[in-house]
Amino acid sequence: MSAPKVAGIIPARYDSSRLPGKPLKMIGALSMIERVYKRCMEADLLDFVVVATDDTRIVDAVEAFGGQAVMTKVDHLSGTDRLAEAAEKIDADIIVNIQGDQPFIDPVMISEGVQPLLDDPTLEIATLMYPISREEDIVDPGVVKVVTDLDGNALYFSRSLIPYPRESIEHGVYEHVGLYVYRKDTLLKLADLPPTILERVESLEQLRWLQHGLRIHVRETHCADQAFSGLSVDTMEDLARAADLAKERGL
Image (cartoon, rainbow, N blue to C red; front, side, top):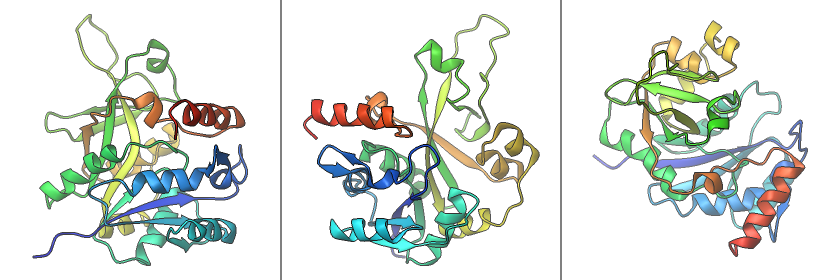
């Protein structure tokens, strides 16, 4: 039996509410989307990479630097819906959902997310987590936390602190890293699942999948520089910070 074909898909909407035209914003000499794309191309376990967008300007920009892009509908309610539409248009068995606003994503993290699905043919979804060390991140609702069972499968994701330290027992607190890996048929199924109450309360789409009974495997990433690799660009201030980092590191 041939090895599964693995595709990285980068959803890239043009009309970001906080930073319109975000994928085409320049970070030094390269656009945001080109930086993300080129980092993904360095991942050992990806066979190819595609940008899924709703705007021809992004398609043109991607094709100009030699990348591959597919057009999707403008009115998707979630990134998963856009990803599923793009997945239907490509030949792949495993789909990696790569955030289009993380210009310095570590290619090793992509392979870390893919490997569990290659190792376990019964596994449908995998993602990553990272130990939290900063006190301000522990209490920040913008930092999503995750707890797992003894086999590394997600028990719950929350914007609140989990587990809550009722007793003084040494334990770790883990941040969920929003990189998802799915089997293609699972991804298409996710797009049809109705929202659930936990998803609506926490505003976390992965809780929909858990409430519908899907198993999400969570692997701890060994990326040593999460502050750099995990930088998300949502505002002009973030964009300036990304440009400074690119210059500092000669990227």
